[in-house]
Image (cartoon, rainbow, N blue to C red; front, side, top):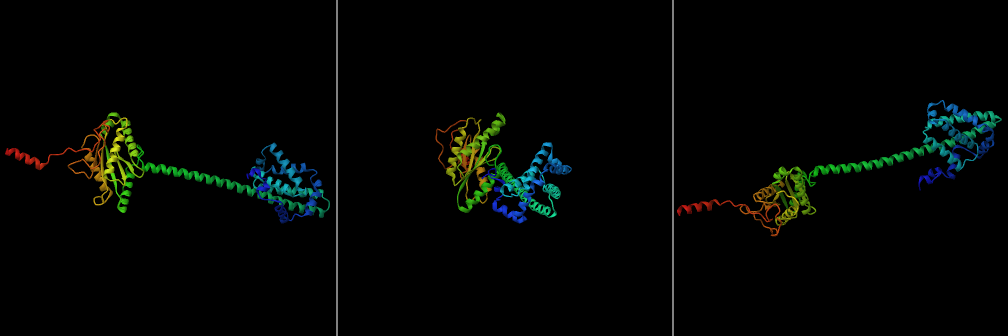
Length: 409
């Protein structure tokens, strides 16, 4: 249930039994109640004079004067104090009385009256009431009875009022704590988001949005060690864009940037979950194909070329792709596998147009194992997509034999 749906007594869990227990603790008896009620009319007959005297004294305290504020504020305070003084001598101190005292504490806390100022005001009020008792109540014995009864009820009031002060402080602390908790969660979330952004900046290439060279090398080492440990296999693809510098210089950097982005999108579109693609600098890209052999890597490369050829503008750029499969006998470090894929890529660049070359190819024949692409493959900006053949250099021995034969002839 909301606080606004509860009385102050309910909020502070004060019931009839709690009130009776509090009255006993400060020694308020039935006789005290009867005594105060009997002399109420006498003591409060000229209550307005008491109020004027009380606030004349407090108005000389700068802190109190600032809290009173103006004439209207003073009138409101006088009305409240008038009710307070009259109820002191009612002789009825049940839940309604307690509720009114709790509200006194709450109001004073809200307007900024500190406990020291409140105690000062109570001290002045009880002093003035004692003077009124001495002047209006006949006989020393009856005066002492009234003053002692008043003293106990005032202490009863103070306990309630300061309970309200304490409860208000606890509520404020709880509220601030919840605010701080919420702020801490928001800050933690903000830090986490910023951390992810920074991690992405450190991990991803700023232009293409795919992993950068640093992240690629970390992933390559991780997969390399896994393959060594588990006896699994994977293939490494190294790719370079032919004629990219010419296109970039001719058509401008925006075209060059768009070409790089297109290649990155093609890479992401052709890769499966778990594969790793990266821009390794300039116009070079790499891919780690998990659990993929040479034949599968070649088919993947053909699909990549087809996807790139399907793009609207290629500006004469073609792809030279080198492939190397992890071989435990040959590759003792990730750099060795990377070097074999890089060398295969440079061999692919010897052919015109798109080319896919495997590191396992014979030096004298660049036609590698693997099904070539279909005959009706797209030709836009390059030759038909098929495994490339390198230009074969004349064999030295055959050339010498031919020369000898020619001289003999």
